[in-house]
Length: 163
Image 1: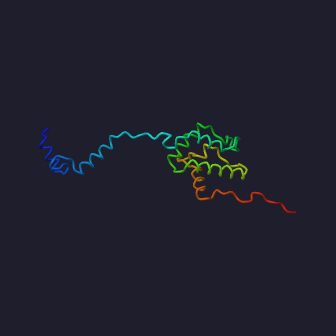
Image 2: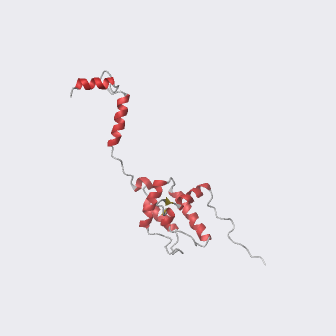
Image 3: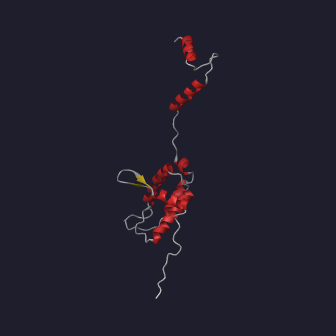
């Protein structure tokens, strides 16, 4: 390798200065190239969902009643089925645990007022796969409704029969 020839090429192409120091063009190239060799850090559950995510997952799941739904599924899914759904939820949405709890309570209360006829289980409330392999999240919809103030139950849930 002819070092002097390489130096002249770098100088002519504008990658180094006369004193053989790298100029901004060279530094930008080095920065771009070094990005290809960095190992990506895997985001852990603690990073994505917070350090107390496991206890929050249990709190979320316990908002659902301990009963069997009309669909034949239990309203409160196994916590092992809920955790991967919550990870997906946090990867795809920007809601807090407090918003999730408020939305879930609003949903459960709404379903109780309607007789729980079409209530979904805690696992499918987070996410459910459609036939076209896409995911939908009722929890995300309810979180947004809670933020927008649309989750309020009607003022008077009872009717008085007058004779």
